[in-house]
Image 1 (cartoon, rainbow, N blue to C red):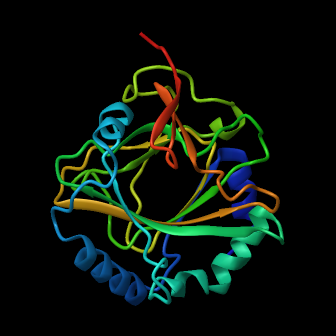
Image 2 (image 1 turned 90 degrees about the horizontal axis):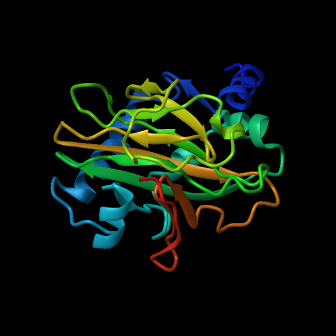
Length: 236
């Protein structure tokens, strides 16, 4: 794995896609655990207000919160450690592991930034692991606008409207997607039975642990710890 090349691509584009990054047997093991945990029709986790305002229908699970877990195997991979260090620096810190599950017929996730871009060098990095294929059949593809981690705040507007220059990603089983928390991105509606990815979030040294507490959407800023809208963003 060419860590220097991937790091350069990440800092230029705000994301990088690495195919076949993980052992297929490990992907199968984690996939089975995720399906067993959620079933096919889990209850939504967020409030009705958040679901309606954010245009985001995703259910989180934090599999490492209850102690040692099969999900620890990804954290222990030397290749992921080295790649993360090449991008974030030697003293980077892990945040948490979060599985994001979307049911069939749900809208996915509207345009957002995972954290405020007000301070450019304070951000999280998503390390997204895909244990099964995501494509036009399943829906739920990730959409990014390259280079927008350097463009500041996501502009107000229609939460779902296409943005010029957007790129649709269709990661396959074993793909790793690294995504800067300031990069404008969304997830398309889910047409298959369900869709999920596992996010091993990380951050550079000196970044506050609550960096992802306030998420920027095109119509609001939302604080997860208080379950409240902290800024309205008019666009009509």
